[in-house]
Image 1 (tube, rainbow, N blue to C red):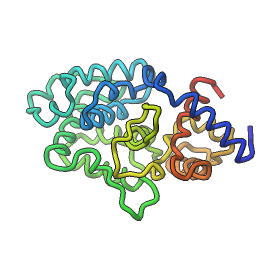
Image 2 (image 1 turned 180 degrees about the vertical axis):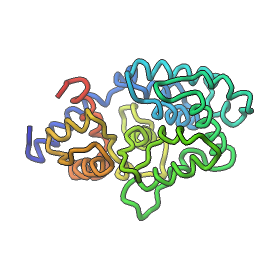
Image 3 (image 1 turned 180 degrees about the horizontal axis):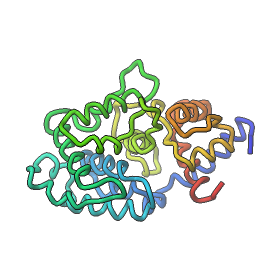
Image 4 (image 1 turned 120 degrees about the vertical axis):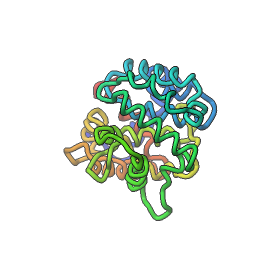
Length: 256
């Protein structure tokens, strides 16, 4: 299905309006950070949800609920006040290959970020001369693993320098940065511009993007994510990643 640019934009805008709605929240991992109103609670729970956001959405949400319950439904207070013994209950947490030891390290690293640095927003700082967030993700990952950890834990924070599209991290950044009136994305970070975001790319969005002529690269990797985003920038130079709603809805809901 190949459309002219004007028709393609109209088609995708219609799908954005259809799927970028509050009703989207309930059955998506983003429902967990929507339990909170405090900025730090939102971003900590959103980051952890993005990290475990693969597999069945029902399972992701159930395990997200377990995580915030273990943090007494106050992620920021838990993180900054936690002692070593407070991380012990998480050793039994499992989501697919994300094991208790991985979870404990992520919580420890978050504690360091929020007590000694500028939290998650500071971690993902984008330099003014950078076109998109990919270099910031690489720096953030390096800083996040600056403490003693198991090498196996590193696989849960994707590395664009290894060619990864970093789908889940880019989804997290979309949640934090995008601002609109629909109330799905939070738009609580001002240090990254929406036009610097990279569209989250997975097998579903990649398939739809190729059918629409937005993506030609065959692999779902970093280069493909950047190619897709450049195509979307041609449709909306200020908010290209809003079309993630359209690609997701077409791929998952409509089996496009």
